[in-house]
Image 1: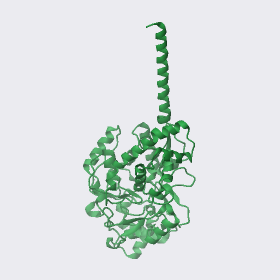
Image 2 (image 1 turned 90 degrees about the vertical axis):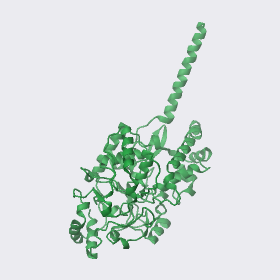
Image 3 (image 1 turned 180 degrees about the vertical axis):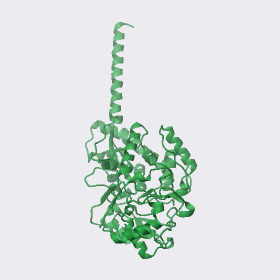
Image 4 (image 1 turned 135 degrees about the vertical axis):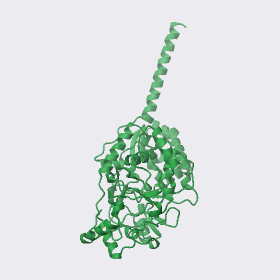
Length: 488
């Protein structure tokens, strides 16, 4: 080879190396670079809007997420876009509580814990909602939102021309970014959403019980996402719990989750975040520690309405003799398993979880390099502390009893049909308004984003029987006990 040819070859190789390096840098910059997360004014704000590390694996491109309700209004429950799913969306915020935004190559939207654990209440229909971080998200229809995303992906309107035209109405993408969206981001997003639909096929079986507002099927989600176990015939609708003041739920032989599946707060946080798509790395473990610290100290909200102090003092003695052993922090039975043969509540949620599922979940998490207390299987339900109980309606693990007054009624007289997901409060009964006329009138006609969802206790997993403690009290004793419960 002549010197000239050698020189030419060296130049060509150099050009090729530079081109490859530039291509690699371009691919990194457009698809993988991670910009620092925004700084939050408080840990409360970070809880509601901060990342748990799910944007990379489960993130939806921000601009696609934004325009989907504009393209598919017919696939939402009603007007209002994402708000029609009952999401908690504070005035002036870019995203609802429980939604995060990070740039990983391009802006992406994912979820954090607050999607299930930030709630609202109002004293009257015309009042702006009071937003309470760490409260149950009792208005949120997670299942409806998941179905919206997958139904949109199946629709022929989910195509580059339609989506890009809508995005261009809101922001100006460069020519290069338009091509990236057209040939890569939009097709890959559609593919990922369709794959998610197949993963969620178990919850869409004909005649299968709906989750409804403020609930999901948590242990089946764990089985089918974390462990990839075969789909079975179990169903376990369960209310989103409060996650405030978690320090009172820590200690030897204390359990969390409705059927005592987990013996440690940190384990619940880790497993929930992994279920949302978080990546198990050092940053993730530090974030779980920060969340643990925040939630352990964040207080339960005070009851916002007047309390009859004298009546509450009378109720304190009734509580001490009828409820304290199971519901006062540090008491013998609080945060411990109450056998199903004693509590006699609907057993479907308990039966969704199996020892084989616990073993497999423990194996998978350990394989990820995470050391946390193991999940377990119990034939029981948890007896939780009652701090902030006023804001945790509806009641029982599946939310089948609308208010605390009904909880003190014999099971055969409890209401069998009511509407969930409306956030105007009823201090008299200690719970949210759930009657047909009120929930439909205010929920649909005046507050479109808060449509009531009908719960029928006759459906599988929705049973409202059991927990008959206190039902034999006199009407005056019940009134006093309710007044005391408002103070917790």
